Each structure stands twice: as structure tokens, then as C-alpha cells.
Length: 436
Image (cartoon, rainbow, N blue to C red; front, side, top):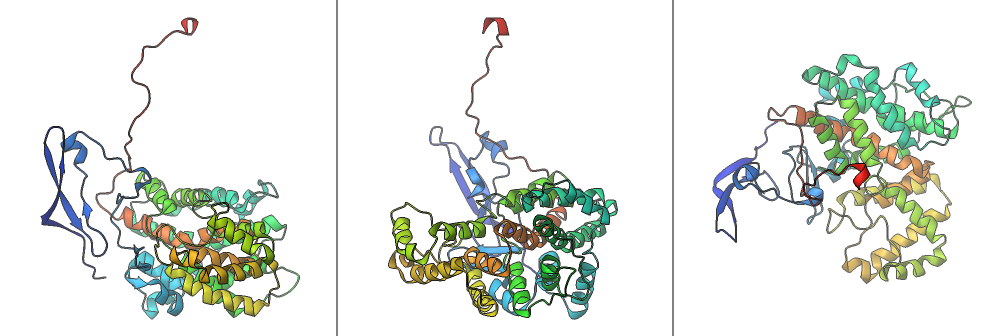
């Protein structure tokens, strides 16, 4: 792959000045292939004796990456330079996973080999099924996923040497392949149905739906429209730059933890409602509204800051979420295919119509985002809200492991060690218990 690397511009520097002493420090500016320039402050503490403070790292680049680029102002999302809309409409999840892992879209031969490798890794060790019996019947599927994904390291000892590129690749293939199987097992366990083994004759999305909804009592035919919708959901959630869970995977990986542990850490981070639970929050909001008659009251409550509008707007995208357009088209097809008569889905469609035409939302660019539509699709398919974040993890695993693999290939990789601004007590003398 031919990609222009970031470079330090000798003529571009940034100078910090101490207002009290007049002392100045100059640091190089690194220019990426796209996006804002970055001030290289790696020697900042050494030269100034000070730290920088950036809570939540909203202005700090934690790494260099060639995988995903986001321009929130333009509503742009690129994977390895390819527009997300083109990938979702013209490609499939296997191609996108290959792209994220290796940097280029595969040739026909590369695609068939990769698809075969993933397909023949979809089964999990038979003893893993006993792990599920240790969980309560009503355990949250994400709690189960945190446990069983981390436990994979106990079964696949032949791919834990992170210094071996081939073992790293095998682990990447195994994780992408086995996450849908484990997710489907978590779903089946939660509803009290027997596990369904993967089938090698089905596509990635078809196989996942089959494992989730097939039962031994009768044949299950996967709808092409539902399979296509699932494939698009997987593509649109595959990677999203240095978000909380991806950063968690990278930080865990910097300690040289095995890849299964790193992905389990990412799943734990994704479980947070502020991150992976957005589409679940959409359904909970719709349930709170209750009926179409209450939508005007709810809309007014949003304007009065009484209610929170979930699934509209985005922290990164300041205009529109580029994934939402594709997801809306898919949503319309799924609802038409299933002919679902669900009050919550009717509320969602009416809420979408009003929000897109109401000046209050239009002026603030509060457009429906990908989570709004994906939540509607998943509910229509028959997934309970507890599974929404699990499906997010199935998709995001290929992004996580691609980011992990990229980091492990960096020769300058060091363990992450954020600094802090200490605001606690100064050093104190110890007082014995009797005198306190």
C-alpha cells in the first residue's frame, strides 16, 4: 500500500511562552496526510518540567494511525482512504475487515483466502459451552461476553506470542471469526434455547443470523434483506478511530497483554451506556414516550431541556453522521420486508419525521444518527435491547484488532502511562492510631 507518511516539517514549529519568566520552548509540528497538524510534545516534560492537562484527551493525539480518518465538520468517515458510504453500498463486511487489517481492499484470490480463514475459525472449543452454565439465566449478555472472550486465551495457546507476526494474524482471524459465535451463544443462553453451531456455507452476516434465530425443530431460512441489513450494520460500526473502547484496547495492548485480553477490555469499555449503549438508549427513549400522541409533548420537553433526545446528533459529527444515510435506507427495507406492526417503531418513524422538519432540530443539526436507525432495525429483527451492544462488539472487533495489530507493528511502541494533575493533600506526618 502506498500511503504518504506523516512528516515533521522543519519550518513548522509551535512555541510555548512562560508569561512569568519569559522563557520559551519550541516544539516541532507534525503534519499528517489529512486533518489538523499536531504539536509533538513528547519532550515537553523533559524540557519544561511541566505536564499538559487534557481531560478525556479531546485535544491530544494518543497515537499515529493509518486506519480510520474522521472529519466531524464535513461529516466524513474514511477507512484506509475509502468513504464509508462506498464501502457500505458496494462492499461487504469481509472485504472491510480485510481492508482494516491489511490496508487495501483484497484481490479476488486474497478475498477468497481470507473468507475461508475466517469461516473455518468460527467454531469455538467445545468446552467453552460449560462457561455459559456458570452464568445466571438472566445475566446480561455483555457480562457474559467480557468473561468468555477473555477466556479464549485459555484455549488458544498457539497464538499468544505477540512478538510473532504470524501468531498475531491468527489471533486476529480467530477473534473476528469467533465473536459472532460467542455472541449468538450469549443470546441463545439468555432465551433458554440450545446453541446453534456455525455453518460454513453461509456468509458472515447470514451465519450470525442463523446462529441467533435457528432452532433444531425446524429449518431457518435467512432473509437476504435482513442479511444485507446486518452486513451493513457490521460495516458501519467496524471502526471509528480512537474512541473510548479502541483507546482501551490500545492501552491494554501497550502492556503486551495477549490480544484476547485486550479485546475483552474493549468490550468492557464498550458496555458503558455513554459509548456502546446508544442504540439501546434510543429504544428506552421510545418506550418512555409510549405512544405517538405523546410525541409533541416529548419534543417540547426536549426543547425545554426536560427530556434527552437519544439517537440524534453526534459528539464527533457536527453536521450529519455519514453512516446514518445508509442505515436509513436499510431500515426502510427491513421494515417493509418484515411488515412489523410495532408501536415503538411507529413512534420512531414519527419522531424522525418531526425532528427532520422542526426548525429547532434543523438549526442545531440534530439529525438522526446511525444508532437511531440501527436500534430500530435490530428490534425489528427480533433482538432484545440487551443484545444491541453485543452486536456492536461483534462488528467493532475487526477495528479493535486492526488497531491492536497496527500498534504492535510499531517499533517505538511503549507502555501507555498518562500523567496527572495531583490535587490531593501534601506530604503529612503519620499519627499513630491512639493519638488521632
